[in-house]
Length: 257
Image (cartoon, rainbow, N blue to C red; front, side, top):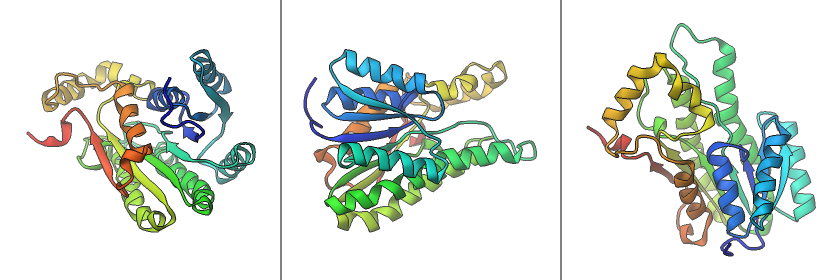
């Protein structure tokens, strides 16, 4: 363990699985105290905290529906009260489902909008005032390669991720003068539990083969640890001059054909 973030407190939504879990583990390895937030299953957050503790790190588990402003307010208030403030926020909560036009129910659409976009705004809205009062803070939100290229049958998902990127760009104008860096990461295909059904469903074989053809890198699906490394860079002092950026990390998928 090294000490890039020693003495810092990081709040990671979606921190109990996938890329969020990888971010939580790497932050703890770098000395941060990590507030690991699961959406509904405390056991998952506790498992990540136990893994962090076993490696000598420090973390606290939470459950919160970050789509709900009352849950977010309670979560942030509790953490600020116990830790004295939140130095870093990572909004990694997300869902990935197809939304073919004419065959998508409103519940599926709302779930993606609320989880991928609304929750990110609610978390930033709750955390930023405390950061501004202290004159510093680092925020990383999750966009996607799907914010810059269309994906057939996934229009709602693409729209939510494009919304995150534009939110981050606009918020940078508000937050930078207050000492807060806000940026976004835009992963491509990444092997996580969130997209396991899409990756393993026989009905998606043609889609997956097309992704393989369009991806320049021989590794079509990135590892969560790859993306976590970029997140930690954006949270570090090395990204001091970055405000409002969405950084692609997509195995070259968006580069073109």
